[in-house]
Length: 433
Ligand SMILES: *Cc1c(COP(=O)(O)O)cnc(C)c1O
Image (cartoon, rainbow, N blue to C red):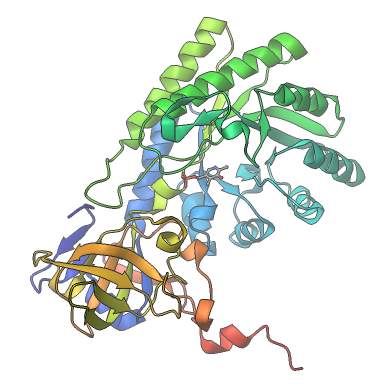
Protein backbone atom coordinates (compact mmCIF):
# COMPACT_ATOMS: atom_id res chain seq x y z
CA UNK A 1 0.00 0.00 0.00
CA UNK A 2 1.25 3.48 -0.90
CA UNK A 3 0.49 4.80 2.60
CA UNK A 4 1.41 2.87 5.79
CA UNK A 5 -1.85 3.66 7.67
CA UNK A 6 -3.87 1.88 4.96
CA UNK A 7 -4.13 -1.91 4.79
CA UNK A 8 -6.40 -4.72 3.67
CA UNK A 9 -8.27 -6.91 6.20
CA UNK A 10 -9.36 -10.56 6.04
CA UNK A 11 -12.54 -9.64 4.19
CA UNK A 12 -10.30 -8.03 1.53
CA UNK A 13 -11.65 -4.59 2.50
CA UNK A 14 -9.53 -1.47 2.61
CA UNK A 15 -8.81 -0.27 6.16
CA UNK A 16 -7.69 3.12 7.44
CA UNK A 17 -6.13 3.36 10.89
CA UNK A 18 -7.21 -0.28 11.38
CA UNK A 19 -10.92 0.41 10.63
CA UNK A 20 -12.87 -1.14 7.77
CA UNK A 21 -13.70 1.57 5.21
CA UNK A 22 -16.89 -0.29 4.25
CA UNK A 23 -18.18 0.03 7.82
CA UNK A 24 -17.29 3.72 7.81
CA UNK A 25 -19.16 4.15 4.52
CA UNK A 26 -22.17 2.29 5.96
CA UNK A 27 -22.21 4.39 9.12
CA UNK A 28 -21.62 7.84 7.63
CA UNK A 29 -22.82 7.39 4.04
CA UNK A 30 -20.98 8.43 0.87
CA UNK A 31 -19.36 10.55 -0.36
CA UNK A 32 -17.37 10.91 2.81
CA UNK A 33 -13.96 12.32 3.72
CA UNK A 34 -12.03 10.16 6.19
CA UNK A 35 -8.90 11.34 8.01
CA UNK A 36 -6.49 9.29 10.09
CA UNK A 37 -5.91 11.67 13.00
CA UNK A 38 -2.83 9.80 14.20
CA UNK A 39 -1.13 10.46 10.86
CA UNK A 40 -1.86 14.19 11.16
CA UNK A 41 -0.62 14.29 14.74
CA UNK A 42 2.57 12.35 14.04
CA UNK A 43 3.36 14.57 11.03
CA UNK A 44 2.93 17.63 13.29
CA UNK A 45 5.39 16.07 15.74
CA UNK A 46 7.92 15.38 12.97
CA UNK A 47 7.84 19.04 11.96
CA UNK A 48 7.92 20.32 15.54
CA UNK A 49 10.85 18.13 16.60
CA UNK A 50 12.79 18.76 13.39
CA UNK A 51 12.28 22.54 13.69
CA UNK A 52 13.41 22.55 17.33
CA UNK A 53 16.51 20.59 16.34
CA UNK A 54 17.32 22.72 13.29
CA UNK A 55 16.39 26.18 14.59
CA UNK A 56 16.32 25.94 18.40
CA UNK A 57 13.55 25.51 20.98
CA UNK A 58 11.73 28.73 19.97
CA UNK A 59 11.15 27.45 16.44
CA UNK A 60 7.47 27.19 15.54
CA UNK A 61 6.15 25.33 12.52
CA UNK A 62 2.82 26.75 11.34
CA UNK A 63 0.05 24.69 9.76
CA UNK A 64 -1.14 26.41 6.57
CA UNK A 65 -4.80 26.02 7.37
CA UNK A 66 -6.09 26.71 3.87
CA UNK A 67 -5.19 23.04 3.21
CA UNK A 68 -7.86 21.86 5.68
CA UNK A 69 -9.92 24.16 7.86
CA UNK A 70 -12.61 23.29 10.39
CA UNK A 71 -12.87 23.92 14.13
CA UNK A 72 -11.67 20.47 15.22
CA UNK A 73 -8.64 20.69 12.97
CA UNK A 74 -7.48 23.86 14.76
CA UNK A 75 -7.93 22.05 18.10
CA UNK A 76 -5.71 19.18 16.90
CA UNK A 77 -3.06 21.65 15.70
CA UNK A 78 -3.19 23.58 19.01
CA UNK A 79 -2.82 20.32 20.97
CA UNK A 80 0.23 19.41 18.89
CA UNK A 81 1.81 22.78 19.68
CA UNK A 82 2.01 24.19 16.16
CA UNK A 83 1.00 27.69 15.11
CA UNK A 84 -1.26 28.37 12.13
CA UNK A 85 -1.35 30.48 9.04
CA UNK A 86 -4.76 31.92 8.16
CA UNK A 87 -5.65 33.63 4.90
CA UNK A 88 -9.12 35.05 5.41
CA UNK A 89 -11.57 36.45 7.91
CA UNK A 90 -13.40 33.12 7.77
CA UNK A 91 -10.32 31.14 8.75
CA UNK A 92 -9.55 33.66 11.53
CA UNK A 93 -13.12 33.33 12.79
CA UNK A 94 -12.92 29.52 12.76
CA UNK A 95 -9.60 29.62 14.66
CA UNK A 96 -11.14 31.98 17.23
CA UNK A 97 -14.13 29.64 17.62
CA UNK A 98 -11.71 26.77 18.23
CA UNK A 99 -10.01 28.82 20.95
CA UNK A 100 -6.72 28.83 19.04
CA UNK A 101 -4.05 30.95 20.81
CA UNK A 102 -4.05 34.20 18.85
CA UNK A 103 -0.36 34.95 19.37
CA UNK A 104 0.43 31.83 17.31
CA UNK A 105 -1.65 32.99 14.34
CA UNK A 106 -0.01 34.43 11.21
CA UNK A 107 -2.43 36.27 8.94
CA UNK A 108 -1.68 36.13 5.21
CA UNK A 109 -3.32 37.24 1.97
CA UNK A 110 -2.47 39.37 -1.01
CA UNK A 111 -5.60 41.49 -0.67
CA UNK A 112 -6.74 41.80 2.92
CA UNK A 113 -9.67 44.17 3.23
CA UNK A 114 -9.88 46.85 5.91
CA UNK A 115 -12.48 44.66 7.60
CA UNK A 116 -10.04 41.68 7.59
CA UNK A 117 -7.27 43.84 9.07
CA UNK A 118 -9.58 45.27 11.75
CA UNK A 119 -10.74 41.74 12.64
CA UNK A 120 -7.12 40.53 12.94
CA UNK A 121 -6.04 43.54 15.03
CA UNK A 122 -9.16 43.17 17.20
CA UNK A 123 -8.38 39.47 17.78
CA UNK A 124 -4.78 40.35 18.74
CA UNK A 125 -3.43 38.09 15.99
CA UNK A 126 0.27 37.62 16.76
CA UNK A 127 1.65 38.47 13.34
CA UNK A 128 0.22 39.94 10.16
CA UNK A 129 2.17 39.13 7.00
CA UNK A 130 1.84 42.36 5.04
CA UNK A 131 1.78 41.88 1.28
CA UNK A 132 2.38 45.36 -0.12
CA UNK A 133 2.51 49.15 0.29
CA UNK A 134 -1.25 49.82 0.26
CA UNK A 135 -1.90 47.22 2.93
CA UNK A 136 0.94 48.56 5.07
CA UNK A 137 -0.56 52.05 5.05
CA UNK A 138 -4.07 50.74 5.73
CA UNK A 139 -2.78 48.69 8.67
CA UNK A 140 -0.92 51.71 10.10
CA UNK A 141 -4.15 53.74 9.98
CA UNK A 142 -6.19 50.94 11.61
CA UNK A 143 -3.60 50.39 14.37
CA UNK A 144 -3.31 54.13 15.04
CA UNK A 145 -7.10 54.34 15.47
CA UNK A 146 -7.09 51.28 17.75
CA UNK A 147 -4.13 52.62 19.73
CA UNK A 148 -2.10 49.44 19.23
CA UNK A 149 1.17 48.46 17.66
CA UNK A 150 1.03 45.40 15.38
CA UNK A 151 3.80 42.90 14.87
CA UNK A 152 4.28 42.18 11.16
CA UNK A 153 6.37 40.31 8.63
CA UNK A 154 6.73 41.57 5.08
CA UNK A 155 5.99 39.14 2.27
CA UNK A 156 8.95 39.22 -0.08
CA UNK A 157 9.17 37.74 -3.60
CA UNK A 158 12.65 36.20 -3.71
CA UNK A 159 12.56 35.50 -7.47
CA UNK A 160 12.55 31.71 -7.32
CA UNK A 161 10.88 29.47 -9.83
CA UNK A 162 10.63 26.10 -8.05
CA UNK A 163 9.74 24.23 -11.22
CA UNK A 164 13.05 25.00 -12.85
CA UNK A 165 14.56 24.58 -9.39
CA UNK A 166 16.92 27.48 -9.48
CA UNK A 167 16.82 31.18 -8.80
CA UNK A 168 15.75 33.05 -11.90
CA UNK A 169 15.92 36.74 -12.62
CA UNK A 170 12.24 37.14 -13.39
CA UNK A 171 10.04 34.14 -12.46
CA UNK A 172 7.99 34.87 -9.42
CA UNK A 173 9.00 38.54 -9.44
CA UNK A 174 5.94 38.77 -11.68
CA UNK A 175 3.48 37.55 -9.05
CA UNK A 176 0.42 38.93 -7.32
CA UNK A 177 2.07 38.01 -4.00
CA UNK A 178 4.61 40.04 -2.11
CA UNK A 179 7.19 42.68 -2.97
CA UNK A 180 10.19 41.83 -5.12
CA UNK A 181 13.81 42.10 -4.02
CA UNK A 182 14.84 42.32 -7.68
CA UNK A 183 13.12 45.64 -8.36
CA UNK A 184 14.36 47.36 -5.21
CA UNK A 185 10.78 47.61 -3.95
CA UNK A 186 11.36 45.10 -1.14
CA UNK A 187 14.00 47.33 0.46
CA UNK A 188 11.72 50.30 -0.04
CA UNK A 189 8.80 48.63 1.79
CA UNK A 190 11.15 47.65 4.65
CA UNK A 191 12.15 51.33 5.01
CA UNK A 192 8.51 52.35 4.93
CA UNK A 193 7.53 49.77 7.60
CA UNK A 194 10.38 50.90 9.85
CA UNK A 195 9.13 54.49 9.63
CA UNK A 196 5.57 53.74 10.79
CA UNK A 197 4.89 54.25 14.52
CA UNK A 198 2.21 51.57 14.91
CA UNK A 199 4.06 48.88 12.97
CA UNK A 200 6.57 46.53 14.59
CA UNK A 201 8.57 44.91 11.79
CA UNK A 202 9.85 41.54 13.03
CA UNK A 203 11.12 40.03 9.80
CA UNK A 204 10.41 38.73 6.31
CA UNK A 205 8.36 35.98 4.73
CA UNK A 206 8.46 34.15 1.41
CA UNK A 207 6.55 31.23 -0.08
CA UNK A 208 7.83 29.82 -3.34
CA UNK A 209 5.16 27.30 -4.33
CA UNK A 210 3.51 24.00 -3.56
CA UNK A 211 3.97 20.26 -4.20
CA UNK A 212 7.75 20.68 -4.45
CA UNK A 213 9.97 17.62 -3.96
CA UNK A 214 13.43 19.05 -4.56
CA UNK A 215 15.06 20.78 -1.61
CA UNK A 216 17.19 23.01 -3.85
CA UNK A 217 14.54 25.74 -4.43
CA UNK A 218 13.91 25.97 -0.67
CA UNK A 219 17.64 26.21 -0.01
CA UNK A 220 17.96 28.90 -2.70
CA UNK A 221 15.07 30.83 -1.15
CA UNK A 222 16.58 30.55 2.34
CA UNK A 223 19.96 31.81 1.10
CA UNK A 224 18.38 34.72 -0.81
CA UNK A 225 16.22 35.69 2.18
CA UNK A 226 19.10 35.62 4.67
CA UNK A 227 21.14 37.71 2.22
CA UNK A 228 18.22 40.15 2.12
CA UNK A 229 18.18 40.40 5.94
CA UNK A 230 21.92 41.17 5.74
CA UNK A 231 21.23 43.88 3.15
CA UNK A 232 18.56 45.39 5.44
CA UNK A 233 21.08 45.52 8.27
CA UNK A 234 23.60 47.26 5.99
CA UNK A 235 21.16 49.75 4.41
CA UNK A 236 18.74 50.43 7.28
CA UNK A 237 20.87 49.62 10.33
CA UNK A 238 18.25 47.17 11.66
CA UNK A 239 18.74 43.48 12.44
CA UNK A 240 15.46 41.69 11.83
CA UNK A 241 14.97 38.56 13.93
CA UNK A 242 12.40 36.41 12.13
CA UNK A 243 12.46 34.57 8.82
CA UNK A 244 9.42 32.69 7.54
CA UNK A 245 10.17 30.39 4.62
CA UNK A 246 6.57 29.41 3.76
CA UNK A 247 5.22 25.98 2.85
CA UNK A 248 5.36 23.71 -0.14
CA UNK A 249 6.91 20.27 0.58
CA UNK A 250 5.36 17.72 -1.78
CA UNK A 251 3.28 14.62 -1.07
CA UNK A 252 3.17 11.47 -3.24
CA UNK A 253 -0.27 11.07 -4.85
CA UNK A 254 0.64 8.07 -7.02
CA UNK A 255 3.31 5.35 -7.19
CA UNK A 256 5.16 7.51 -9.75
CA UNK A 257 5.62 10.48 -7.40
CA UNK A 258 8.81 10.75 -5.38
CA UNK A 259 8.49 10.95 -1.61
CA UNK A 260 10.16 13.40 0.70
CA UNK A 261 11.63 12.98 4.16
CA UNK A 262 10.16 15.96 6.02
CA UNK A 263 12.63 15.69 8.87
CA UNK A 264 15.69 15.91 6.66
CA UNK A 265 14.03 18.63 4.60
CA UNK A 266 13.88 20.79 7.75
CA UNK A 267 17.41 19.78 8.76
CA UNK A 268 18.74 20.88 5.36
CA UNK A 269 17.00 24.25 5.72
CA UNK A 270 18.64 24.66 9.12
CA UNK A 271 22.08 23.93 7.67
CA UNK A 272 21.72 26.50 4.90
CA UNK A 273 20.29 29.23 7.16
CA UNK A 274 23.06 28.77 9.74
CA UNK A 275 25.84 28.63 7.14
CA UNK A 276 24.75 31.82 5.33
CA UNK A 277 24.32 33.59 8.68
CA UNK A 278 27.77 32.47 9.78
CA UNK A 279 29.49 33.61 6.59
CA UNK A 280 27.76 37.01 6.85
CA UNK A 281 28.27 37.23 10.61
CA UNK A 282 24.50 37.65 11.02
CA UNK A 283 22.62 36.34 14.10
CA UNK A 284 20.57 33.24 13.23
CA UNK A 285 16.93 34.38 12.97
CA UNK A 286 13.87 32.64 14.40
CA UNK A 287 12.74 30.46 11.52
CA UNK A 288 9.11 29.66 10.69
CA UNK A 289 7.89 27.20 8.09
CA UNK A 290 4.29 26.78 6.93
CA UNK A 291 3.56 23.26 5.66
CA UNK A 292 -0.08 22.66 4.72
CA UNK A 293 -0.46 19.79 2.28
CA UNK A 294 2.27 17.64 3.83
CA UNK A 295 0.53 17.67 7.23
CA UNK A 296 -2.88 16.46 6.06
CA UNK A 297 -2.93 15.20 2.45
CA UNK A 298 -1.96 11.54 2.87
CA UNK A 299 -3.90 11.24 6.14
CA UNK A 300 -7.14 11.54 4.16
CA UNK A 301 -9.15 9.55 1.66
CA UNK A 302 -12.59 9.96 0.12
CA UNK A 303 -15.14 7.15 -0.02
CA UNK A 304 -17.69 7.09 -2.83
CA UNK A 305 -20.33 4.64 -4.01
CA UNK A 306 -20.00 3.44 -7.58
CA UNK A 307 -23.11 4.24 -9.59
CA UNK A 308 -22.45 2.85 -13.03
CA UNK A 309 -19.70 1.48 -15.22
CA UNK A 310 -19.82 2.43 -18.88
CA UNK A 311 -17.54 0.82 -21.45
CA UNK A 312 -17.39 2.57 -24.81
CA UNK A 313 -15.82 0.08 -27.24
CA UNK A 314 -12.70 1.58 -28.83
CA UNK A 315 -12.80 4.50 -26.40
CA UNK A 316 -12.81 4.75 -22.63
CA UNK A 317 -14.27 3.02 -19.62
CA UNK A 318 -16.07 5.30 -17.22
CA UNK A 319 -16.73 4.59 -13.55
CA UNK A 320 -19.22 7.10 -12.14
CA UNK A 321 -19.30 7.90 -8.44
CA UNK A 322 -21.72 9.81 -6.18
CA UNK A 323 -19.40 12.82 -5.75
CA UNK A 324 -16.92 14.58 -8.02
CA UNK A 325 -15.71 18.11 -8.62
CA UNK A 326 -17.76 19.63 -5.80
CA UNK A 327 -15.85 17.56 -3.21
CA UNK A 328 -12.58 17.29 -5.18
CA UNK A 329 -12.01 20.00 -7.80
CA UNK A 330 -8.27 19.36 -8.15
CA UNK A 331 -8.34 17.34 -11.37
CA UNK A 332 -10.67 19.84 -13.00
CA UNK A 333 -8.47 22.70 -11.81
CA UNK A 334 -5.00 21.38 -12.50
CA UNK A 335 -5.12 17.77 -13.70
CA UNK A 336 -3.86 16.52 -10.34
CA UNK A 337 -3.29 12.77 -10.30
CA UNK A 338 -4.72 10.42 -7.70
CA UNK A 339 -4.65 6.77 -6.74
CA UNK A 340 -8.03 5.00 -6.55
CA UNK A 341 -9.15 1.52 -5.62
CA UNK A 342 -12.24 -0.55 -4.98
CA UNK A 343 -12.45 -0.78 -1.19
CA UNK A 344 -14.52 -4.02 -1.32
CA UNK A 345 -11.73 -5.91 -3.13
CA UNK A 346 -8.71 -3.84 -2.18
CA UNK A 347 -6.12 -6.61 -2.65
CA UNK A 348 -7.29 -7.63 -6.12
CA UNK A 349 -4.84 -6.60 -8.83
CA UNK A 350 -5.73 -3.45 -10.73
CA UNK A 351 -6.26 -5.00 -14.14
CA UNK A 352 -8.81 -2.46 -15.33
CA UNK A 353 -8.34 1.08 -16.63
CA UNK A 354 -11.05 3.67 -16.14
CA UNK A 355 -11.82 7.33 -16.12
CA UNK A 356 -13.34 8.28 -12.81
CA UNK A 357 -16.35 10.52 -13.38
CA UNK A 358 -18.30 12.59 -10.89
CA UNK A 359 -22.05 13.12 -10.95
CA UNK A 360 -22.18 16.75 -12.09
CA UNK A 361 -23.64 17.99 -15.35
CA UNK A 362 -20.23 18.96 -16.66
CA UNK A 363 -17.92 16.87 -18.88
CA UNK A 364 -14.89 18.16 -17.00
CA UNK A 365 -16.23 16.69 -13.76
CA UNK A 366 -13.58 13.97 -13.47
CA UNK A 367 -11.40 12.78 -10.61
CA UNK A 368 -8.88 11.23 -12.97
CA UNK A 369 -8.47 9.76 -16.43
CA UNK A 370 -7.18 6.33 -17.42
CA UNK A 371 -6.56 5.27 -13.86
CA UNK A 372 -5.52 1.69 -13.03
CA UNK A 373 -8.20 0.16 -10.79
CA UNK A 374 -10.01 -3.08 -9.96
CA UNK A 375 -13.07 -3.98 -12.01
CA UNK A 376 -16.01 -2.14 -10.48
CA UNK A 377 -19.72 -2.87 -10.03
CA UNK A 378 -22.64 -0.64 -9.09
CA UNK A 379 -22.78 -0.42 -5.30
CA UNK A 380 -19.05 -0.92 -4.70
CA UNK A 381 -17.26 1.49 -2.39
CA UNK A 382 -14.49 3.31 -4.25
CA UNK A 383 -11.69 5.04 -2.35
CA UNK A 384 -9.65 7.94 -3.71
CA UNK A 385 -6.48 8.27 -1.65
CA UNK A 386 -4.53 11.26 -0.39
CA UNK A 387 -7.46 13.70 -0.36
CA UNK A 388 -6.80 15.26 3.06
CA UNK A 389 -5.51 18.56 1.65
CA UNK A 390 -7.28 21.02 -0.66
CA UNK A 391 -10.40 18.84 -1.03
CA UNK A 392 -12.80 19.69 1.82
CA UNK A 393 -11.32 23.20 1.93
CA UNK A 394 -11.99 23.67 -1.81
CA UNK A 395 -15.43 22.05 -1.84
CA UNK A 396 -18.32 23.79 -3.60
CA UNK A 397 -22.06 23.27 -3.89
CA UNK A 398 -22.12 22.92 -7.65
CA UNK A 399 -25.30 21.19 -8.82
CA UNK A 400 -26.64 21.89 -5.32
CA UNK A 401 -24.79 18.89 -3.87
CA UNK A 402 -24.41 18.99 -0.09
CA UNK A 403 -20.80 18.80 1.18
CA UNK A 404 -19.73 15.41 2.58
CA UNK A 405 -18.89 14.93 6.25
CA UNK A 406 -15.33 14.79 7.59
CA UNK A 407 -14.82 11.66 9.70
CA UNK A 408 -11.81 11.38 11.99
CA UNK A 409 -10.31 7.97 12.77
CA UNK A 410 -8.20 7.58 15.89
CA UNK A 411 -7.26 4.60 18.05
CA UNK A 412 -9.85 2.29 16.47
CA UNK A 413 -12.74 4.76 16.77
CA UNK A 414 -14.45 7.26 14.51
CA UNK A 415 -15.86 10.67 15.31
CA UNK A 416 -17.30 13.44 13.20
CA UNK A 417 -15.13 16.49 12.52
CA UNK A 418 -17.78 18.01 10.27
CA UNK A 419 -21.29 16.58 9.80
CA UNK A 420 -22.80 16.01 6.36
CA UNK A 421 -24.69 18.99 4.96
CA UNK A 422 -28.42 18.53 4.59
CA UNK A 423 -30.73 19.83 1.89
CA UNK A 424 -32.05 22.22 4.55
CA UNK A 425 -28.50 23.59 4.97
CA UNK A 426 -28.48 24.27 1.24
CA UNK A 427 -31.53 26.51 1.39
CA UNK A 428 -30.76 28.00 4.81
CA UNK A 429 -29.57 31.31 3.38
CA UNK A 430 -32.24 31.65 0.70
CA UNK A 431 -34.77 34.40 1.38
CA UNK A 432 -38.52 34.45 0.71
CA UNK A 433 -39.08 36.74 -2.25
C1 LIG B 1 -0.45 27.68 0.38
C2 LIG B 1 0.53 28.29 1.30
C3 LIG B 1 1.22 27.51 2.21
C4 LIG B 1 1.09 26.00 2.27
O1 LIG B 1 1.55 25.37 1.14
P1 LIG B 1 1.59 23.76 1.08
O2 LIG B 1 2.04 23.48 -0.30
O3 LIG B 1 0.22 23.28 1.34
O4 LIG B 1 2.56 23.31 2.11
C5 LIG B 1 2.06 28.13 3.11
N1 LIG B 1 2.22 29.48 3.10
C6 LIG B 1 1.56 30.27 2.24
C7 LIG B 1 1.77 31.73 2.28
C8 LIG B 1 0.71 29.71 1.29
O5 LIG B 1 0.08 30.50 0.43
